[in-house]
Figure 1 (tube, rainbow, N blue to C red):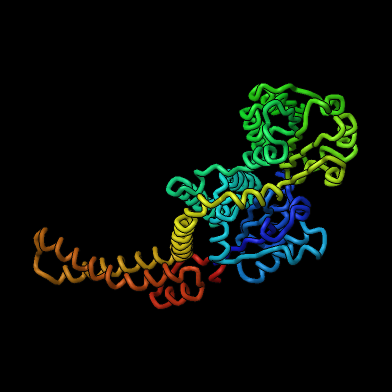
Figure 2 (spheres, helix red, strand yellow):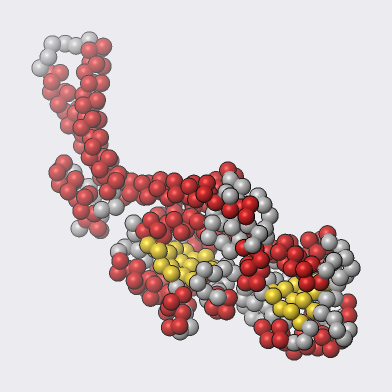
Length: 423
């Protein structure tokens, strides 16, 4: 199966590595076009999230697979120390991994709903970049269909265990009741927005929303918050005990020096909890070393999430079964696509022979009535279909094998327009 998945994920790569190899949309497009142009691939897509950066590649052979993997290092890796963190799955194993990712079975949060939206966006980006071939497009569409089936027929996504909820739970563990606790919100993305709404329901107040584009204003309105400038946080330091950061910035947004300035204005002996929900991280890690400051990032939240997934785990076997069935069906479909032209030519050849022999036989017989002609037509069709059943079944099972297709064409004297692989 000419397919390869290669990349890094939360299973092996720690957060500092994942944020170094995280790609924004422009970088994804550049990487896809470069890999397709220089690695001899016919198709490529990339999914880059807080938990993974991985490429889905249509490859011609093992050599292409190795070349594609080396290109991954060339364009993304900053040094050889990442070599042991990069995984590669080829063929059916690669397809299975891709389907599991889209279905939320490979996420840090089992059944995570957000990853499907991210996967569909990765599909669209590859389409817009012009790096999808027909097979990779089919693979990704089938993965989306399977993910929807998994979510609609199992309970793997019904028990809410999102990062926003975990962030609020951690805040309650550290700070106690959130009623009347002030919060500074930096970033209004999906995770940060979810956390803000939950905080508002818990009675957290005031909610100071740092102005960063139109999302900030919309978030402030939705949670009854107060829109502020980032440089005002120091002067407002006594109004909040919690900072939640979740921007899409590729650079740090909150630095140690800024957190130190906030702490200088806060009450002596108080605590400041900072939840950094972004990848790359928004907060300079050194800020966590300041007295009275606790800084938790996405990996800390993942550890808590893993302890709260018992209900979803019950549904994992059924979800994995659906994925496995979908992968098997897709493999058959892909093989059938490879054998399609040969099967069509074989059927055409059988029909040509059947009709020719039928005409000759009828010409030597007495005049037949309409019923007799229909019976003879049905008989010859049945014989041709039974004779063709075995070779067609063979082609569907081995349609991805160039030698098998060539043998069938030679045995039956088929004449197709020469494809590049058959020249």
